[in-house]
Length: 235
Image (cartoon, rainbow, N blue to C red):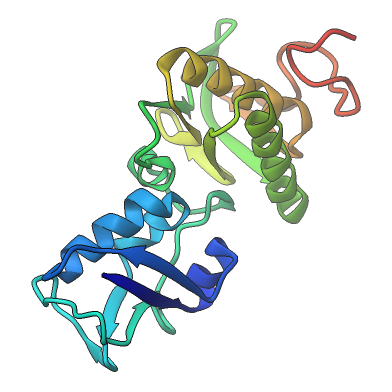
């Protein structure tokens, strides 16, 4: 049977459509419906865990059987719900698991995560803590640009990036990047590209606080030049 599922708010925005069509076997359940959405519309997969299905204007349990005549809607969280963004600058603690769930999809055979943490010693100097600052709106837009570059180089890749700002103690996570691709070699290459390009063009700064002083630090691979060609490309 062929059914139509109505979408709202963030779901509709992500799918770029107000409804989607699915073909399900007779006696399919809500659980089967959600699995079909994950497989056929992977862009919606990260939101399904916090969304609910309604059938004929009533919230439906996972074992509810669907019929072709039902009016079905997929509902994202209403006021008070929280959607985890793919790209973020935040003062909250970071979680690699959250980013893995964002990029995970049925077409991915490999997910690479890069987790950058605060180390205690740099060139013999003991770091007490790091303080990060960002031009937040631009930083998020540049993260999106990096993701677009990755998708152009490695078609089908899914990317998420979160960077923390504020004061971070030793061993705390400062940045998480997750890249999902069909094959592992692509994930290694795209993941390296993501973090190097993030350092190159995303306006985030760190201040190293030592026992005997402090200093703002720039790009560790050389002079900062966000107008330079993309990482890994010939000049």
